[in-house]
Length: 298
Image (cartoon, rainbow, N blue to C red; front, side, top):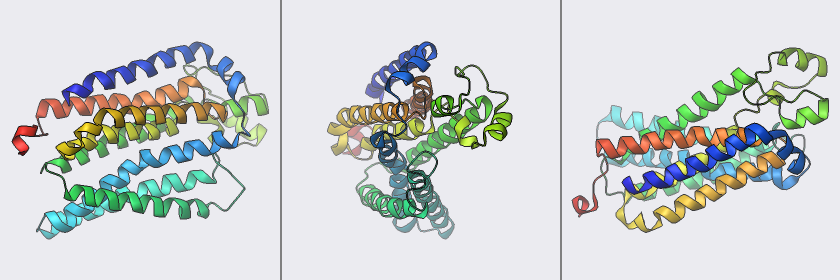
C-alpha cells in the first residue's frame, strides 16, 4: 500500500485545487454549464453511484462468504451474515431512491421502480464479492472490509450529512428558479426554513454543500484501492483501476454541476471527504501491516 500513498495524495491535491477555484468561481462556473433539463446530467450521477455503492455490496458478498464458509461458531456466522445484509441493503436503498427522487427523474415513474432497477444490479455485485472472496489469500481481509465500511460510514454520514445540516446551502437550481441569494460554501443560510415556507420548496433544495453523490462516487476509488489486496494476481490492475475510478468520479462531479444540483466547491469537498478517509485508512494498513507481503503469501 506504500506505492498507493503518492497516487492518493495526487488525487487529493487535484480536488483541493478545484475546491479553491470553486470557492471563488462557483457561481460563474454554474452559470456557464448548468442546465437542470439535461437528461445526461441527471442520469449520470445515478449510474455513477452504482460502482461507488457497489463497493458496499461487494463487501457484503465477502461478509456473506465469511459467515457461511469461513467460521464455525454460530454467533460469528450471525454477525457476518447480519453485516452482509446491511452492506447489501444500503446500496439498494440509496441507489434505488435516487432514480425517481428529487435529484433524479422525479415524477416520471413511481419511486419503487428505482428499487427494481437497483436490486438485481446490487445482487450481481454481491455475488461477485462472494466468489472473489473465495479466492482471497489474505486471511485478515475481513479486517480490511471492516475498515472500508468504517471509512464509508464516517465519510457519507459523518461528513456529508452533518455538513449539509450545518450550512444549508441553496442549490444552484433553487437560486435561478426562485431568486434565492447565492451563498458561498463558507456562509451559512440561516433563513432556509423561512424561505422554504415562503417559496413552498423542499428542504432538499438547501442541501448543496457538500455533494453526497460525489462522496458516494469516490467510494469507488476506495474500493479499487483495497481490491487488489485480496490476491496478488490482481496487483497488475491496481493503478489502472485506481485512475479509471478517479476519472469516473470526475464525470459524476461534472454531471452534478451540469444538473444545477451542486457547485464546483460542493463536489470537490464531497470527493475530498472520502479521499481523506481513504488516505487515513491506507496509512493504517501500512503501519499495522495487516496486509501480507507477496513473499509471505507464497
